[in-house]
Image (tube, rainbow, N blue to C red; front, side, top):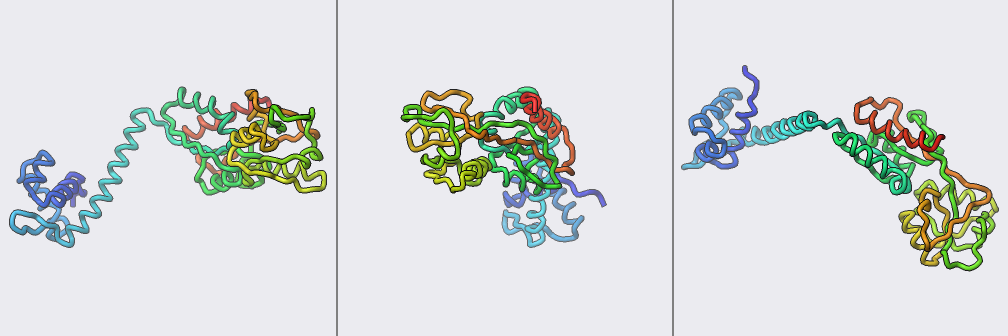
Length: 297
């Protein structure tokens, strides 16, 4: 028995949708006898009648309707395979899924993503802003290929490569009175504090740093992004502690002060130990690893 023909399935769908052999022939740019031959070959192959005529119309039988549903699935998969192969022919290399913290996505990754898009236009990039815990889970579940997270991360299934050590700093409204030369945990306890959302790794780091004084800090407001925090500080709603990379470009509405004792976070690249190595994955990983070289970690 010959293999099932995709052309026969397309003819089946054309007849079923138009309810007419002649209309299907016009749609497929075939003769009506050619359409009839293909339907007869399908009926002979499966040993069932696929259409019954009622007047001038052709209606699918129960077996015909079931075969139509199967044909739709088969042709959809066939079209997807064709599209995938065309992408490779046209220079598509593959897809890479990256998870990253909000600050890295906003202040560190844009130049990397630009170079990747210019040097490797055949790579399809999916970049997702996720808190560290969610990125770790997504790597373990194979929903992400690579992620930049805030340490510590302790999972035996992961390869963890430190990339950057980033200082945390205090920010004050530029027009505030008596801005100190530094922020200590004791001073932080006396100020209305504005922080990023509680799922952010930086939030936990800052809370631990302030709590060294023995008291829990009072957070006036939690906001979704660092930029929202900076805007709230500029509006005299309080002070905040943010990664230094978020204030490298000076803002006339805020003043930056160091923390004493210093507070740092380490950003790292994580990946699954058993992740299959593919071209797009290797290229994107190498680009992210250049962040480590740039910072001389």
